[in-house]
Image (tube, rainbow, N blue to C red; front, side, top):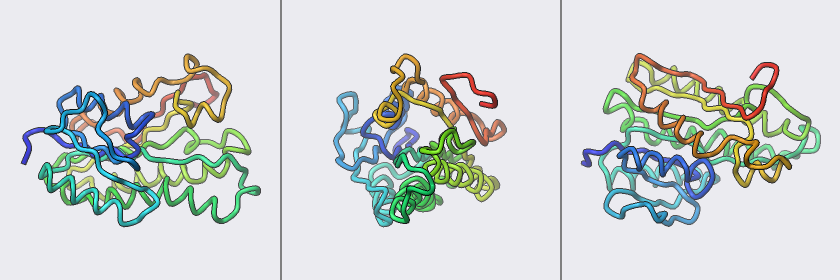
Amino acid sequence: MTDRKVVLISGAGRGIGASAAKVFAQQGWSVSLGMRRPALPEWALDDVHQAVAYDATDGRSAGAWVDEAMSRFGRIDAVVANAGIMIPKTVIEADDEDFDALLTVNVKAPRQLVKAAWEPLAASGRGRVVIVGSLSGKRVKSARSGSYSVSKFAAVALAHAIRHAGFERGIRATAVCPGFVATDMARGLTDRGDAAMTSPDDLARIIAMLVSLPNEASVAEFAVNCQLEESF
């Protein structure tokens, strides 16, 4: 078993996931990167980090990933469920297949991953789960974000449900809810430049900070915004 703490990060190939992986590595963690096309980034060390094939649309993928991580490291201390999709359709325009895809990737996949890693997370008495939600999981900002919001409201509720399920075993769960983050997903939805959006590196540092807090400083939700809104 490694002496380093181990974090599993889904959607680690780019954007928030890639930034989070680098920040955790810089802080001395062993990082298991869940990626559709697994490849270690330039900063990673073969004997410290791991890239694993992970497909959020495949219900068997989570268990296989956890098995690989446990075989390699012997422990799992944190899960950052970051993989997600956006389908910019109103709840009327969207069809059942759209909703199935949103719920599968944004809600079912994080639950499957946390469930697969549950016993390793509980083993230390201070396991950590971060569900990367969205401010779209706190309010419906526009008609075209409506279907996405439905899934992200569920993702935020999932984080709260995990927090309740694991609290007595030392597992703490947080829903991190950003607004626009300078990633490929956000760039396809807005014409604002990167300088007017939250940096994925800043969000990564926030995630790492939340994971580092003791059991007695549990944070259920953490909202991050790049603009002034009435409530967020």
